[in-house]
Length: 555
Ligand code: PEP
Ligand code: MG
Image (cartoon, rainbow, N blue to C red; front, side, top):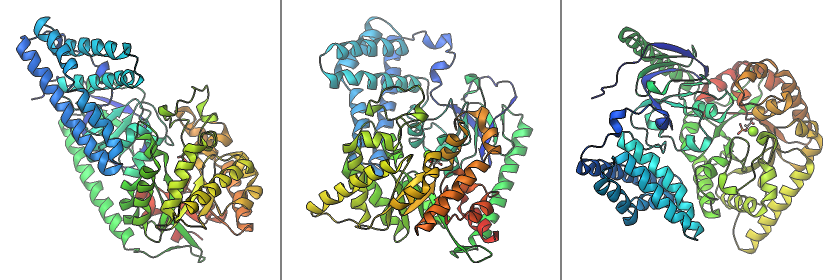
Protein backbone atom coordinates (compact mmCIF):
# COMPACT_ATOMS: atom_id res chain seq x y z
CA UNK A 1 0.00 0.00 0.00
CA UNK A 2 1.21 3.51 -0.82
CA UNK A 3 1.63 5.21 2.53
CA UNK A 4 3.04 8.44 1.05
CA UNK A 5 1.24 11.60 2.07
CA UNK A 6 -0.60 13.42 -0.71
CA UNK A 7 1.30 16.48 -1.88
CA UNK A 8 -0.08 19.92 -2.42
CA UNK A 9 -2.12 20.51 -5.60
CA UNK A 10 -0.04 22.55 -8.09
CA UNK A 11 -0.27 23.60 -11.72
CA UNK A 12 2.96 23.91 -13.67
CA UNK A 13 3.44 24.87 -17.28
CA UNK A 14 5.91 24.01 -20.01
CA UNK A 15 6.05 23.67 -23.77
CA UNK A 16 3.78 21.01 -25.27
CA UNK A 17 5.73 19.25 -28.00
CA UNK A 18 3.25 16.62 -29.06
CA UNK A 19 -0.50 16.57 -28.83
CA UNK A 20 -2.74 14.73 -26.45
CA UNK A 21 -3.19 14.31 -22.74
CA UNK A 22 -2.44 11.59 -20.25
CA UNK A 23 -3.05 10.93 -16.57
CA UNK A 24 -1.00 8.75 -14.27
CA UNK A 25 1.55 8.62 -11.48
CA UNK A 26 4.77 10.55 -11.97
CA UNK A 27 8.01 8.62 -12.10
CA UNK A 28 11.23 10.58 -11.68
CA UNK A 29 14.03 9.11 -13.73
CA UNK A 30 17.50 9.28 -12.17
CA UNK A 31 16.08 11.40 -9.40
CA UNK A 32 16.04 8.73 -6.71
CA UNK A 33 19.30 10.06 -5.34
CA UNK A 34 17.84 13.54 -4.93
CA UNK A 35 14.92 12.27 -2.88
CA UNK A 36 14.83 13.09 0.75
CA UNK A 37 15.47 9.82 2.52
CA UNK A 38 13.30 8.97 5.43
CA UNK A 39 15.70 8.73 8.41
CA UNK A 40 13.82 5.60 9.47
CA UNK A 41 14.96 4.04 6.22
CA UNK A 42 18.61 3.98 7.13
CA UNK A 43 18.13 2.53 10.60
CA UNK A 44 19.13 -1.11 10.28
CA UNK A 45 16.71 -3.86 11.27
CA UNK A 46 18.22 -7.16 12.43
CA UNK A 47 21.27 -8.32 10.41
CA UNK A 48 19.30 -11.31 9.12
CA UNK A 49 16.49 -9.04 7.91
CA UNK A 50 18.91 -6.56 6.33
CA UNK A 51 20.73 -9.38 4.54
CA UNK A 52 17.43 -10.72 3.26
CA UNK A 53 16.45 -7.23 1.96
CA UNK A 54 19.74 -6.85 0.14
CA UNK A 55 19.66 -10.38 -1.29
CA UNK A 56 16.13 -9.75 -2.57
CA UNK A 57 17.11 -6.44 -4.16
CA UNK A 58 20.10 -8.11 -5.85
CA UNK A 59 17.79 -10.81 -7.24
CA UNK A 60 15.36 -8.16 -8.55
CA UNK A 61 18.11 -6.30 -10.37
CA UNK A 62 19.50 -9.52 -11.83
CA UNK A 63 16.04 -10.39 -13.16
CA UNK A 64 15.69 -6.93 -14.70
CA UNK A 65 19.09 -7.25 -16.31
CA UNK A 66 18.07 -10.62 -17.72
CA UNK A 67 14.97 -9.06 -19.28
CA UNK A 68 16.98 -6.19 -20.63
CA UNK A 69 19.47 -8.62 -22.18
CA UNK A 70 16.61 -10.50 -23.88
CA UNK A 71 15.13 -7.30 -25.27
CA UNK A 72 18.50 -6.06 -26.48
CA UNK A 73 19.23 -9.40 -28.11
CA UNK A 74 15.92 -9.26 -29.95
CA UNK A 75 16.19 -5.65 -31.05
CA UNK A 76 19.95 -5.10 -31.45
CA UNK A 77 22.00 -8.26 -31.17
CA UNK A 78 23.67 -10.93 -29.08
CA UNK A 79 26.93 -9.04 -28.69
CA UNK A 80 25.22 -5.99 -27.15
CA UNK A 81 22.98 -8.10 -24.92
CA UNK A 82 26.22 -9.41 -23.41
CA UNK A 83 26.78 -6.08 -21.63
CA UNK A 84 23.76 -6.70 -19.44
CA UNK A 85 24.66 -10.36 -18.90
CA UNK A 86 28.09 -9.29 -17.63
CA UNK A 87 26.39 -6.83 -15.28
CA UNK A 88 24.20 -9.60 -13.89
CA UNK A 89 27.29 -11.79 -13.38
CA UNK A 90 29.03 -8.98 -11.49
CA UNK A 91 26.20 -9.09 -8.95
CA UNK A 92 26.97 -12.78 -8.37
CA UNK A 93 30.66 -12.21 -7.69
CA UNK A 94 31.54 -14.05 -4.48
CA UNK A 95 34.05 -11.41 -3.33
CA UNK A 96 31.43 -8.69 -3.69
CA UNK A 97 28.84 -10.76 -1.84
CA UNK A 98 31.39 -11.47 0.91
CA UNK A 99 31.96 -7.74 1.28
CA UNK A 100 28.20 -7.17 1.67
CA UNK A 101 27.89 -10.02 4.16
CA UNK A 102 30.71 -8.67 6.27
CA UNK A 103 29.20 -5.16 6.39
CA UNK A 104 25.77 -6.44 7.42
CA UNK A 105 26.38 -9.61 9.45
CA UNK A 106 29.59 -8.56 11.19
CA UNK A 107 29.34 -4.79 11.34
CA UNK A 108 25.54 -4.56 11.70
CA UNK A 109 25.05 -2.05 8.88
CA UNK A 110 21.79 -1.46 7.01
CA UNK A 111 21.38 -2.94 3.52
CA UNK A 112 21.84 0.55 1.98
CA UNK A 113 25.01 1.32 3.95
CA UNK A 114 26.41 -2.16 3.33
CA UNK A 115 25.77 -1.72 -0.39
CA UNK A 116 27.68 1.51 -0.47
CA UNK A 117 30.58 0.29 1.68
CA UNK A 118 30.80 -3.05 -0.13
CA UNK A 119 30.81 -1.47 -3.59
CA UNK A 120 33.41 1.10 -2.50
CA UNK A 121 35.67 -1.61 -1.14
CA UNK A 122 35.29 -3.85 -4.15
CA UNK A 123 35.82 -0.93 -6.56
CA UNK A 124 39.00 0.05 -4.73
CA UNK A 125 40.32 -3.51 -5.13
CA UNK A 126 39.45 -3.60 -8.84
CA UNK A 127 40.86 -0.12 -9.42
CA UNK A 128 44.16 -1.07 -7.78
CA UNK A 129 44.67 -4.06 -10.09
CA UNK A 130 46.75 -3.19 -13.10
CA UNK A 131 44.07 -4.36 -15.49
CA UNK A 132 42.20 -1.79 -17.59
CA UNK A 133 39.30 -4.21 -18.21
CA UNK A 134 38.69 -4.78 -14.50
CA UNK A 135 39.26 -1.10 -13.71
CA UNK A 136 36.53 -0.25 -16.22
CA UNK A 137 34.15 -2.52 -14.30
CA UNK A 138 34.13 -0.02 -11.41
CA UNK A 139 31.93 2.29 -13.51
CA UNK A 140 29.58 -0.66 -14.12
CA UNK A 141 29.52 -1.30 -10.37
CA UNK A 142 28.52 2.30 -9.61
CA UNK A 143 25.66 2.02 -12.10
CA UNK A 144 24.61 -1.31 -10.62
CA UNK A 145 24.71 0.11 -7.09
CA UNK A 146 22.22 2.80 -8.16
CA UNK A 147 19.90 0.14 -9.51
CA UNK A 148 20.15 -1.97 -6.34
CA UNK A 149 19.48 1.12 -4.22
CA UNK A 150 16.31 1.72 -6.19
CA UNK A 151 15.29 -1.91 -5.79
CA UNK A 152 15.82 -1.58 -2.01
CA UNK A 153 13.26 1.21 -2.10
CA UNK A 154 10.86 -1.05 -3.91
CA UNK A 155 11.48 0.61 -7.25
CA UNK A 156 12.50 -0.82 -10.52
CA UNK A 157 15.92 -0.38 -12.10
CA UNK A 158 16.93 3.02 -13.43
CA UNK A 159 17.89 1.40 -16.70
CA UNK A 160 15.01 3.21 -18.22
CA UNK A 161 13.68 0.21 -20.09
CA UNK A 162 11.99 -1.18 -17.03
CA UNK A 163 9.61 1.57 -15.97
CA UNK A 164 8.07 0.25 -12.77
CA UNK A 165 4.48 1.02 -13.68
CA UNK A 166 2.56 2.85 -16.41
CA UNK A 167 3.64 6.41 -15.65
CA UNK A 168 4.31 9.97 -16.68
CA UNK A 169 8.09 9.95 -16.85
CA UNK A 170 9.87 12.97 -15.41
CA UNK A 171 13.49 13.63 -16.34
CA UNK A 172 15.86 16.55 -16.19
CA UNK A 173 16.31 16.00 -19.89
CA UNK A 174 16.65 12.73 -21.71
CA UNK A 175 19.67 11.90 -23.75
CA UNK A 176 18.87 10.03 -26.95
CA UNK A 177 20.60 6.95 -25.49
CA UNK A 178 18.32 7.03 -22.46
CA UNK A 179 15.35 7.49 -24.73
CA UNK A 180 16.22 4.51 -26.82
CA UNK A 181 16.15 2.32 -23.72
CA UNK A 182 12.73 3.50 -22.55
CA UNK A 183 10.03 0.95 -22.04
CA UNK A 184 7.51 2.37 -24.47
CA UNK A 185 4.70 0.14 -23.26
CA UNK A 186 4.67 1.79 -19.81
CA UNK A 187 5.26 5.33 -20.97
CA UNK A 188 1.99 7.29 -20.66
CA UNK A 189 3.58 10.69 -21.06
CA UNK A 190 6.85 12.54 -20.81
CA UNK A 191 7.83 15.61 -18.80
CA UNK A 192 11.27 17.16 -18.99
CA UNK A 193 12.57 19.98 -16.85
CA UNK A 194 14.66 21.31 -19.71
CA UNK A 195 14.56 20.73 -23.47
CA UNK A 196 12.99 22.43 -26.48
CA UNK A 197 10.49 21.47 -29.17
CA UNK A 198 13.30 20.53 -31.54
CA UNK A 199 15.38 18.59 -29.01
CA UNK A 200 15.73 14.88 -29.66
CA UNK A 201 13.48 14.06 -26.71
CA UNK A 202 10.72 16.04 -28.36
CA UNK A 203 11.37 14.46 -31.74
CA UNK A 204 11.17 11.03 -30.17
CA UNK A 205 8.02 11.82 -28.21
CA UNK A 206 6.33 12.92 -31.41
CA UNK A 207 7.54 9.80 -33.19
CA UNK A 208 6.09 7.62 -30.45
CA UNK A 209 2.84 9.62 -30.31
CA UNK A 210 3.42 10.23 -26.59
CA UNK A 211 1.98 13.37 -24.94
CA UNK A 212 4.97 15.40 -23.84
CA UNK A 213 5.74 18.63 -22.06
CA UNK A 214 9.28 20.01 -22.08
CA UNK A 215 11.01 22.80 -20.24
CA UNK A 216 8.81 22.83 -17.12
CA UNK A 217 11.70 24.32 -15.13
CA UNK A 218 11.70 22.47 -11.85
CA UNK A 219 9.60 19.82 -10.16
CA UNK A 220 9.92 18.81 -6.54
CA UNK A 221 11.05 15.15 -6.45
CA UNK A 222 8.67 14.68 -3.52
CA UNK A 223 5.95 14.44 -6.17
CA UNK A 224 7.46 11.15 -7.33
CA UNK A 225 4.64 8.59 -7.40
CA UNK A 226 1.96 11.29 -7.13
CA UNK A 227 -0.88 11.43 -9.64
CA UNK A 228 -0.62 14.15 -12.29
CA UNK A 229 -2.61 15.26 -15.31
CA UNK A 230 -0.54 16.10 -18.38
CA UNK A 231 -2.19 18.25 -21.02
CA UNK A 232 0.26 18.75 -23.89
CA UNK A 233 -2.23 20.93 -25.79
CA UNK A 234 -2.86 23.36 -22.91
CA UNK A 235 0.86 22.93 -22.06
CA UNK A 236 0.17 22.21 -18.39
CA UNK A 237 0.83 19.60 -15.78
CA UNK A 238 -1.52 19.47 -12.80
CA UNK A 239 0.10 17.84 -9.78
CA UNK A 240 -1.96 16.09 -7.11
CA UNK A 241 -5.34 16.96 -8.67
CA UNK A 242 -8.58 16.67 -6.75
CA UNK A 243 -10.69 13.57 -7.40
CA UNK A 244 -13.21 15.61 -9.39
CA UNK A 245 -10.46 17.08 -11.56
CA UNK A 246 -9.00 13.64 -12.19
CA UNK A 247 -12.38 12.20 -13.12
CA UNK A 248 -13.22 15.06 -15.48
CA UNK A 249 -9.78 14.77 -17.08
CA UNK A 250 -10.11 11.03 -17.62
CA UNK A 251 -13.48 11.58 -19.28
CA UNK A 252 -11.85 14.13 -21.53
CA UNK A 253 -8.99 11.75 -22.38
CA UNK A 254 -11.55 9.12 -23.36
CA UNK A 255 -13.52 11.62 -25.45
CA UNK A 256 -10.38 12.78 -27.26
CA UNK A 257 -9.32 9.22 -27.92
CA UNK A 258 -12.70 8.57 -29.53
CA UNK A 259 -12.41 11.65 -31.72
CA UNK A 260 -8.82 10.68 -32.64
CA UNK A 261 -10.00 7.20 -33.65
CA UNK A 262 -12.73 8.70 -35.85
CA UNK A 263 -10.19 11.08 -37.38
CA UNK A 264 -7.82 8.19 -38.08
CA UNK A 265 -10.60 6.22 -39.70
CA UNK A 266 -11.40 9.20 -41.90
CA UNK A 267 -7.77 9.63 -42.88
CA UNK A 268 -7.38 5.93 -43.53
CA UNK A 269 -10.29 6.22 -45.92
CA UNK A 270 -7.86 8.17 -48.10
CA UNK A 271 -6.42 4.70 -48.60
CA UNK A 272 -3.14 4.19 -50.36
CA UNK A 273 -3.92 6.91 -52.85
CA UNK A 274 -0.74 8.89 -53.51
CA UNK A 275 -0.52 12.48 -52.29
CA UNK A 276 -1.34 14.63 -55.29
CA UNK A 277 -1.87 18.38 -55.07
CA UNK A 278 -4.84 20.19 -56.61
CA UNK A 279 -2.67 21.06 -59.61
CA UNK A 280 -1.70 17.41 -60.08
CA UNK A 281 1.78 17.42 -58.57
CA UNK A 282 2.80 14.14 -56.97
CA UNK A 283 4.48 14.60 -53.56
CA UNK A 284 6.27 11.77 -51.77
CA UNK A 285 5.27 11.34 -48.13
CA UNK A 286 8.02 9.56 -46.24
CA UNK A 287 8.67 8.74 -42.58
CA UNK A 288 11.49 9.62 -40.19
CA UNK A 289 12.50 6.71 -37.99
CA UNK A 290 15.19 5.91 -35.44
CA UNK A 291 15.32 2.15 -35.90
CA UNK A 292 13.48 -0.91 -37.15
CA UNK A 293 10.95 -0.77 -34.31
CA UNK A 294 9.25 2.18 -36.04
CA UNK A 295 8.89 0.61 -39.49
CA UNK A 296 5.51 -0.84 -38.61
CA UNK A 297 4.01 2.49 -37.55
CA UNK A 298 5.55 4.15 -40.63
CA UNK A 299 3.89 1.63 -42.93
CA UNK A 300 0.62 1.80 -40.98
CA UNK A 301 0.60 5.55 -41.56
CA UNK A 302 1.00 4.98 -45.29
CA UNK A 303 4.67 6.00 -45.59
CA UNK A 304 5.85 5.61 -49.18
CA UNK A 305 9.41 5.34 -47.98
CA UNK A 306 11.79 6.19 -45.14
CA UNK A 307 13.14 9.68 -45.73
CA UNK A 308 15.43 9.70 -42.71
CA UNK A 309 16.76 6.78 -40.74
CA UNK A 310 18.67 8.44 -37.91
CA UNK A 311 21.37 5.77 -37.88
CA UNK A 312 23.13 7.14 -34.79
CA UNK A 313 20.34 5.86 -32.51
CA UNK A 314 21.73 2.35 -32.87
CA UNK A 315 25.21 3.55 -31.84
CA UNK A 316 23.75 5.46 -28.89
CA UNK A 317 22.17 2.36 -27.39
CA UNK A 318 25.52 0.56 -27.16
CA UNK A 319 28.61 0.75 -24.99
CA UNK A 320 31.05 0.41 -27.88
CA UNK A 321 31.18 0.75 -31.66
CA UNK A 322 28.86 -1.70 -33.42
CA UNK A 323 30.42 -4.20 -35.77
CA UNK A 324 29.73 -4.30 -39.51
CA UNK A 325 27.58 -7.40 -38.92
CA UNK A 326 25.46 -5.66 -36.27
CA UNK A 327 24.90 -2.68 -38.55
CA UNK A 328 24.21 -4.83 -41.59
CA UNK A 329 21.50 -6.81 -39.75
CA UNK A 330 19.87 -3.63 -38.42
CA UNK A 331 19.74 -2.06 -41.92
CA UNK A 332 18.74 -5.32 -43.61
CA UNK A 333 15.80 -5.59 -41.20
CA UNK A 334 14.48 -2.16 -42.25
CA UNK A 335 15.19 -2.53 -45.97
CA UNK A 336 13.56 -5.94 -46.22
CA UNK A 337 10.44 -4.74 -44.43
CA UNK A 338 10.19 -1.66 -46.66
CA UNK A 339 10.18 -3.90 -49.75
CA UNK A 340 10.44 -1.83 -52.92
CA UNK A 341 9.94 1.45 -51.03
CA UNK A 342 12.99 3.69 -50.72
CA UNK A 343 14.91 3.83 -47.39
CA UNK A 344 17.29 6.75 -46.89
CA UNK A 345 19.93 5.92 -44.30
CA UNK A 346 21.63 8.97 -42.88
CA UNK A 347 25.20 8.15 -41.90
CA UNK A 348 26.28 8.57 -38.29
CA UNK A 349 25.28 11.98 -36.92
CA UNK A 350 27.05 11.77 -33.56
CA UNK A 351 28.31 14.71 -31.52
CA UNK A 352 26.53 17.83 -30.20
CA UNK A 353 23.64 16.47 -28.11
CA UNK A 354 24.28 12.90 -29.27
CA UNK A 355 27.65 12.09 -27.71
CA UNK A 356 29.20 8.64 -27.97
CA UNK A 357 31.48 8.50 -24.91
CA UNK A 358 33.27 5.42 -26.23
CA UNK A 359 34.74 7.45 -29.10
CA UNK A 360 36.87 9.21 -26.51
CA UNK A 361 36.60 12.61 -28.22
CA UNK A 362 37.82 15.62 -26.25
CA UNK A 363 35.29 17.82 -24.44
CA UNK A 364 34.34 20.89 -26.47
CA UNK A 365 33.28 24.39 -25.52
CA UNK A 366 30.62 24.51 -28.24
CA UNK A 367 29.76 20.96 -29.27
CA UNK A 368 27.03 22.01 -31.74
CA UNK A 369 29.76 23.92 -33.59
CA UNK A 370 32.35 21.26 -33.00
CA UNK A 371 33.20 17.73 -34.02
CA UNK A 372 29.90 16.28 -35.08
CA UNK A 373 28.44 14.12 -37.81
CA UNK A 374 30.49 13.97 -41.01
CA UNK A 375 33.43 15.70 -39.32
CA UNK A 376 33.81 12.77 -36.91
CA UNK A 377 33.33 10.25 -39.72
CA UNK A 378 36.02 11.82 -41.86
CA UNK A 379 38.38 11.88 -38.89
CA UNK A 380 37.59 8.21 -38.06
CA UNK A 381 37.68 6.71 -41.50
CA UNK A 382 37.78 3.05 -40.48
CA UNK A 383 34.71 3.53 -38.31
CA UNK A 384 32.95 5.32 -41.17
CA UNK A 385 33.93 2.62 -43.66
CA UNK A 386 32.41 -0.01 -41.37
CA UNK A 387 29.09 1.81 -41.62
CA UNK A 388 29.35 2.41 -45.38
CA UNK A 389 30.15 -1.27 -45.99
CA UNK A 390 27.13 -2.31 -43.94
CA UNK A 391 24.89 0.10 -45.87
CA UNK A 392 26.24 -1.13 -49.20
CA UNK A 393 25.69 -4.78 -48.27
CA UNK A 394 22.11 -4.01 -47.18
CA UNK A 395 21.55 -2.19 -50.50
CA UNK A 396 21.52 -5.57 -52.24
CA UNK A 397 18.30 -6.42 -50.39
CA UNK A 398 16.04 -3.55 -51.41
CA UNK A 399 15.93 0.11 -52.39
CA UNK A 400 18.49 1.99 -50.32
CA UNK A 401 19.90 5.48 -50.44
CA UNK A 402 22.73 6.92 -48.37
CA UNK A 403 22.74 10.48 -47.06
CA UNK A 404 25.49 12.55 -45.40
CA UNK A 405 24.67 14.93 -42.51
CA UNK A 406 26.15 18.37 -41.67
CA UNK A 407 27.89 18.97 -44.97
CA UNK A 408 29.56 22.38 -45.40
CA UNK A 409 31.69 21.90 -48.51
CA UNK A 410 32.00 20.08 -51.84
CA UNK A 411 35.38 18.74 -50.62
CA UNK A 412 33.67 16.86 -47.77
CA UNK A 413 31.27 15.23 -50.21
CA UNK A 414 34.15 14.27 -52.50
CA UNK A 415 36.06 12.70 -49.59
CA UNK A 416 32.97 10.70 -48.59
CA UNK A 417 32.34 9.61 -52.18
CA UNK A 418 35.93 8.36 -52.40
CA UNK A 419 35.48 6.31 -49.23
CA UNK A 420 32.21 4.89 -50.57
CA UNK A 421 33.95 3.93 -53.84
CA UNK A 422 36.78 2.35 -51.86
CA UNK A 423 34.23 0.27 -49.93
CA UNK A 424 32.60 -0.74 -53.21
CA UNK A 425 35.95 -1.94 -54.57
CA UNK A 426 36.66 -3.91 -51.39
CA UNK A 427 33.26 -5.59 -51.42
CA UNK A 428 33.63 -6.46 -55.10
CA UNK A 429 37.02 -8.05 -54.37
CA UNK A 430 35.39 -10.03 -51.55
CA UNK A 431 32.66 -11.23 -53.90
CA UNK A 432 29.92 -9.42 -51.97
CA UNK A 433 26.91 -7.97 -53.77
CA UNK A 434 25.54 -4.43 -53.45
CA UNK A 435 23.63 -1.84 -55.46
CA UNK A 436 26.22 -0.41 -57.86
CA UNK A 437 23.99 2.65 -58.41
CA UNK A 438 23.22 3.31 -54.74
CA UNK A 439 21.53 6.72 -54.54
CA UNK A 440 23.86 9.21 -52.91
CA UNK A 441 22.60 12.38 -51.22
CA UNK A 442 23.38 14.99 -48.63
CA UNK A 443 21.51 16.90 -45.97
CA UNK A 444 21.22 20.63 -46.32
CA UNK A 445 21.65 21.62 -42.69
CA UNK A 446 24.09 24.50 -42.85
CA UNK A 447 23.90 27.86 -44.60
CA UNK A 448 27.24 26.92 -46.22
CA UNK A 449 25.63 23.93 -47.91
CA UNK A 450 22.61 25.92 -49.09
CA UNK A 451 24.82 28.69 -50.47
CA UNK A 452 26.91 26.16 -52.41
CA UNK A 453 23.91 24.14 -53.54
CA UNK A 454 24.90 24.43 -57.24
CA UNK A 455 28.37 22.89 -56.73
CA UNK A 456 27.01 20.27 -54.34
CA UNK A 457 24.21 19.33 -56.74
CA UNK A 458 26.88 18.27 -59.27
CA UNK A 459 27.98 15.52 -56.93
CA UNK A 460 24.77 14.01 -55.59
CA UNK A 461 21.41 12.54 -56.57
CA UNK A 462 19.34 14.33 -53.96
CA UNK A 463 19.17 16.85 -51.12
CA UNK A 464 17.19 16.49 -47.92
CA UNK A 465 16.80 19.60 -45.81
CA UNK A 466 17.37 19.20 -42.06
CA UNK A 467 15.43 22.27 -41.01
CA UNK A 468 16.13 21.74 -37.30
CA UNK A 469 19.82 22.34 -37.83
CA UNK A 470 19.44 24.70 -40.77
CA UNK A 471 17.30 26.94 -38.57
CA UNK A 472 19.79 26.68 -35.69
CA UNK A 473 22.81 27.56 -37.82
CA UNK A 474 21.08 30.22 -39.92
CA UNK A 475 19.67 32.09 -36.94
CA UNK A 476 22.68 31.36 -34.69
CA UNK A 477 20.10 30.08 -32.20
CA UNK A 478 20.79 26.92 -30.17
CA UNK A 479 17.96 24.47 -30.93
CA UNK A 480 18.17 23.22 -27.32
CA UNK A 481 17.68 26.62 -25.74
CA UNK A 482 14.06 27.16 -24.67
CA UNK A 483 14.56 30.91 -24.49
CA UNK A 484 15.07 30.94 -28.25
CA UNK A 485 12.11 28.75 -29.24
CA UNK A 486 9.96 31.78 -30.02
CA UNK A 487 12.72 33.45 -32.02
CA UNK A 488 13.02 30.30 -34.14
CA UNK A 489 9.26 30.07 -34.59
CA UNK A 490 9.10 33.66 -35.84
CA UNK A 491 12.08 33.58 -38.18
CA UNK A 492 11.62 30.78 -40.64
CA UNK A 493 11.71 33.01 -43.69
CA UNK A 494 15.50 32.93 -44.21
CA UNK A 495 15.44 29.13 -44.01
CA UNK A 496 12.58 28.94 -46.50
CA UNK A 497 14.57 31.08 -48.93
CA UNK A 498 17.60 28.80 -48.57
CA UNK A 499 15.36 25.80 -49.28
CA UNK A 500 14.14 27.50 -52.45
CA UNK A 501 17.71 28.01 -53.67
CA UNK A 502 18.68 24.44 -52.92
CA UNK A 503 15.56 23.18 -54.72
CA UNK A 504 16.36 25.17 -57.88
CA UNK A 505 19.98 23.93 -57.86
CA UNK A 506 19.19 20.22 -57.52
CA UNK A 507 16.31 20.35 -60.01
CA UNK A 508 18.63 21.86 -62.63
CA UNK A 509 20.76 18.72 -62.30
CA UNK A 510 17.76 16.42 -62.47
CA UNK A 511 17.82 15.43 -58.80
CA UNK A 512 15.12 15.66 -56.14
CA UNK A 513 14.79 17.49 -52.84
CA UNK A 514 13.05 16.54 -49.60
CA UNK A 515 12.56 18.12 -46.19
CA UNK A 516 13.06 15.87 -43.17
CA UNK A 517 13.35 18.40 -40.31
CA UNK A 518 10.42 19.27 -38.07
CA UNK A 519 9.23 22.01 -40.45
CA UNK A 520 8.02 19.23 -42.76
CA UNK A 521 5.36 18.33 -40.17
CA UNK A 522 4.12 21.90 -39.76
CA UNK A 523 0.95 21.93 -41.84
CA UNK A 524 0.98 25.74 -41.93
CA UNK A 525 4.14 25.54 -44.07
CA UNK A 526 3.16 22.73 -46.45
CA UNK A 527 1.85 25.02 -49.19
CA UNK A 528 4.96 27.19 -49.06
CA UNK A 529 7.37 24.24 -49.14
CA UNK A 530 5.61 22.75 -52.14
CA UNK A 531 5.65 26.13 -53.90
CA UNK A 532 9.42 26.24 -53.37
CA UNK A 533 9.69 22.98 -55.28
CA UNK A 534 10.04 20.40 -52.51
CA UNK A 535 9.37 16.88 -53.90
CA UNK A 536 9.31 14.86 -50.71
CA UNK A 537 8.29 15.49 -47.09
CA UNK A 538 9.47 13.18 -44.35
CA UNK A 539 7.86 13.27 -40.92
CA UNK A 540 7.45 11.20 -37.75
CA UNK A 541 4.92 8.36 -38.30
CA UNK A 542 2.03 9.92 -36.32
CA UNK A 543 2.01 12.92 -38.71
CA UNK A 544 1.90 10.97 -41.96
CA UNK A 545 -1.84 10.82 -42.52
CA UNK A 546 -2.65 14.43 -41.71
CA UNK A 547 0.27 15.57 -43.89
CA UNK A 548 -0.97 13.47 -46.80
CA UNK A 549 -4.39 15.04 -46.42
CA UNK A 550 -2.92 18.53 -46.23
CA UNK A 551 -0.90 17.97 -49.42
CA UNK A 552 -4.06 17.03 -51.31
CA UNK A 553 -5.55 20.42 -50.32
CA UNK A 554 -2.51 22.38 -51.58
CA UNK A 555 -2.23 23.92 -55.02
C1 PEP B 1 17.53 18.29 -38.87
O1 PEP B 1 18.54 18.85 -38.43
O2 PEP B 1 16.51 18.90 -39.26
C2 PEP B 1 17.47 16.81 -38.93
C3 PEP B 1 16.49 16.19 -39.55
O3 PEP B 1 18.44 16.13 -38.25
P1 PEP B 1 18.46 15.97 -36.64
O4 PEP B 1 17.17 16.53 -36.10
O5 PEP B 1 18.59 14.51 -36.35
O6 PEP B 1 19.66 16.77 -36.27
MG1 MG C 1 20.31 17.66 -38.11
